[in-house]
Length: 319
Image 1 (cartoon, rainbow, N blue to C red):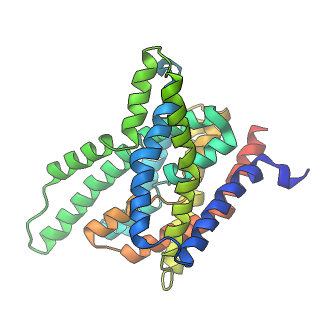
Image 2: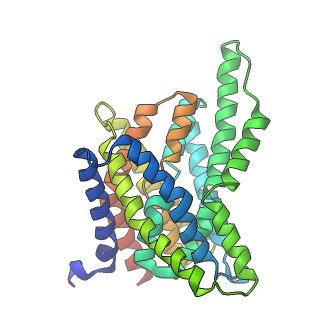
Image 3: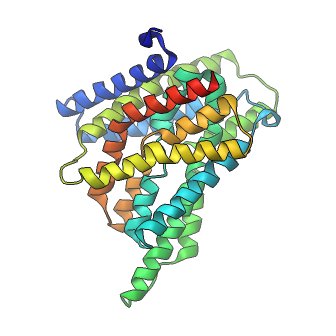
């Protein structure tokens, strides 16, 4: 069999070539720091909402299988709790546990799954994406506040306000340019209407621009990621994220009786590298910021091999 014609090769190589192009552009200074922020805003505030709304605008709720949500997040929640327990209950531990649990389902996952598994696979992924941040980031915010309160109490300081932080995390996860267009697209689909061509075509063109630009931005960010002095700990977090989490998700999906394409997409989603939102927690709580950044970089580089392995295994399993 010609490996160059294998579907895994055909879908992975374009993704990592675009990330590599972004890395080269970042190293050469073709895209400066101020421009990265503006381009990120363009991706998150315009391109991705167009893609998500259009994708979900034809999906009927009664056709959705919600078991992947239960299977995926029961495994992710278990792994998050186990990682915290292993390292000890403190802010540093929680941030690193999130780095080993939170996948980059949007910037990398959407394009990869779309290329590899088409529209049907994308619907399964977006079902997970719709609650990914809400469940994991809200849980992370609450646990971090509890850890911060514990540390503040030991230091004789006033603890933070847990309820206010939890509400802020929940509200921020819902009123957000990722879950909001998914929910709006689903609501539109239930009307039975079709998008007029004059509206659908611009949404399609905007959505098509999302994949290349988001992957180039991943590469640019990777070029600015300092790795020196953090290789060992960062690699342990990356292995946890890229290999152990997908194994747990696969077992959980099997226990829930999920198979076929849904199982494959769930495991691939779990094998994606660490998402950038984890750094926001490291920054807010002023812990392991350099290590978190390094872990994201190592996880992304490692994904070239680990995603290939996971996708080949799932392809053989499905075959």
